[in-house]
Image (cartoon, rainbow, N blue to C red):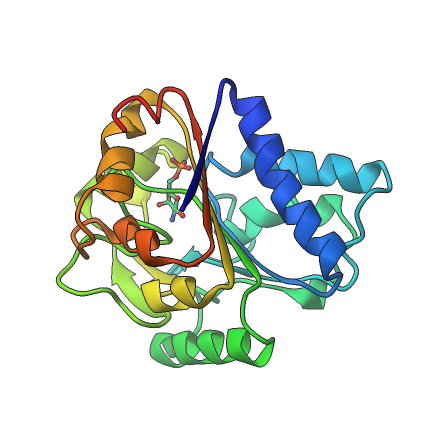
Amino acid sequence: MKIHVYRDLEAQGKAAAALFAAQILKKPDSVLGFATGSTPLRTYAALADLYAQGALDFSRVHTFNLDEYVGMAREHEQSYFNFMYTNLFSKVNIPAENYRLPNGLAADIDRECAEYEAAIEAAGGIDLQFLGIGHDGHIGFNEPCGEFPKATHCVALTPMTIEANKRFFASADEVPRRAISMGIGTIMRARGVVLVIYGADKAEITARALKGPVTPQVPASILQYHPNCTVLLDEAAAAEL
Ligand code: GLP
């Protein structure tokens, strides 16, 4: 793991964007893995800026997102599809047929999971995957559990995650209870991973994930075994390392 610490969030977001920009410049038809949440917002803004300046071309890029809520239409304000469209896809020249998120409205969720996993493989696998982290160490929606999930699957969100995500909804009752998420195996098969963490509230889980034992009880801890994982922290998140 390469760990870098930044003084402010702007520099952290730009550094993550620079890694993705370098990936696209190196391989214009890169397959990128994207995430939602507040963590990637600065990175997506920086990527959109690079595109606006004429420095990046997304026309041959393909993307797969980590996860999507089950039962939520793409058009819903809080869908992860809408998040990606608003914050990135509508701002760069990526063709609509090149970005994909799990379909939370699929009639057969297990089949959707299998097809999503197969689509990633058919695209040649993910070159570079962006990750944030939940307070319980989840990545994507891989919550603490007995063993690391290998492939894209349907998950029940934990009370902690529902609580953390209720800020985007009118109340906790409106937070969907299930999601489709890439598995830990899917994430580990990415050729490169960029994990971005900021804020004092994530200092404890940062230390457990990066320096503690590798255990499915802290899903992000498996990244200690990834051969090409770059971690970008701010000083507050790095405080307990
Ligand atoms: C959600 C997403 C994760 C994300 C996490 C942290 O649960 N499924 O991919 O990393 O939230 O979000 P934030 O960046 O807002 O702290």
